[in-house]
Image (tube, rainbow, N blue to C red):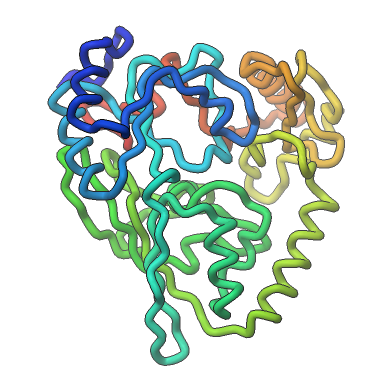
Length: 328
């Protein structure tokens, strides 16, 4: 299969897929509208499978057609290039594959199966209302359950892998596979999902806690976030990973970058590891600001910050296509 596609996906391929997967194929879809930072171009081919069975058939068909695959979850930690994505199919599970099964409770443990397209906000509400504790640290983090697995989302000293039992993935042939937590090489902002695998579901282990106690903890975390982070304005969350023994935000602020602007993108004065955008901002504004901040921190501290955000776009093809394997 040709994975390193050099030309945009053809109209003929789009027509073929539309005939076979009617109602689940869209074209020229704005990705800025589907990311929390609200910048970037369009997806030439945007797919919204109705269920996992359709997803399996769709992935198999895309492989036959030599079309690379780019998954998009809740869009919370990604920045899409202004030129968009024309050489790969963008697949979203958040529109239709977002069920939460009724948990099983045994020995003071709660096991719950979750589709990867479930929004974290919906998952937290589900657990709070029923008294299933363990996910409170995710309060205020946007995105989907699948994205939280891939990035091993974390806050307040906890990580998503702490509550993960297993992950269900689908490969480019449409085959499902189950991975126990111990099989995944997870770490700081790294879920350890094997190459060529798209997360479709996960099993979590929680614990019974009173809804009132969960709500109190969530309220505390929410207040902390509002006090320390920009709230109610577009951003992609933390731009850089924290270096060992330090904090990216502290370094950026100490380097004098707080408030810096490029076009309509700005380093937040409230938390320097956030870049916020105003209407009319472009991905080019954001990327230029990232480059300036990285260089300033390097000059100030002889340290190169590593980006936590994921860049999406044709020019970043190597970020999600590796050799002959698709990074689904």
